[in-house]
Image 1 (cartoon, rainbow, N blue to C red):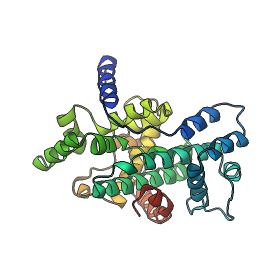
Image 2: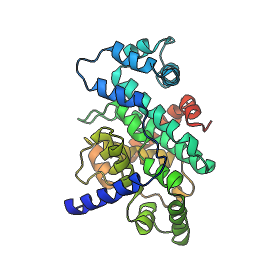
Image 3: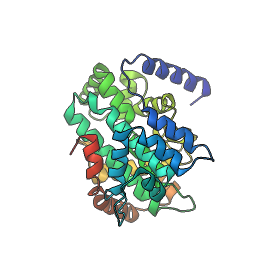
Image 4: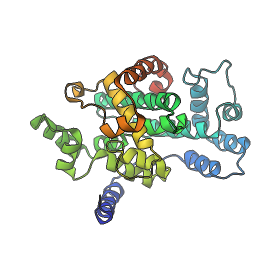
Length: 297
């Protein structure tokens, strides 16, 4: 996409975001943790001290640390111990995940859509984490930001559903009237932009890492030049694995094959994809704690 066009689109998306009343923002605790983790002098005590100022978040971090998600052999009973055991990056991404899940809980007027959305988002997140562990073909992905990227890859859809309900309804109606039209095409027809582009701009507004913003923005077309450090390819593959393992609505009827550029990037065949799907089925059974935080269990 030409730079001028991108700038024009970004300006338009920024105007849309700025015009949304009561748009949630990440809590101060996440902003503080992100700031100190980027400081090379940061200690475990610094992060634990910040978390201790938000008791509710501290409880969530401890619950997630002690859940089957990490599979630790002994119970962790303090935030400082959690930071020491799972690491600074993992804690930051747990805080981001819990924050985003909570930010949209108050705006769940369409409960059926919300449940379907978060179940797919969690499936994508677990798939991304599995891929980060298993597929390292010369490129190693950190499983913690992989999970967070997967969890919020479709966050633009939540903006449509929660804060642009008329436009969201129009997109659904357009798809119903044009059943062969892909979701992205319906979004462009109605809005002039996609949920991925909206999600990227929201991530920029939230001051999330540029890598994460571009992973969100380009997860449907990862071969376009972007700054995601190839996380866009990771999320594209995770999305395919998640959708084929846990189909959403009637997408399984017209779900295309894996994006060719992604298949080539990972040099992956169908047998390996099936192994990833099987691993996701097993791993997803550990999602109960995240489900409870998301309010969908």
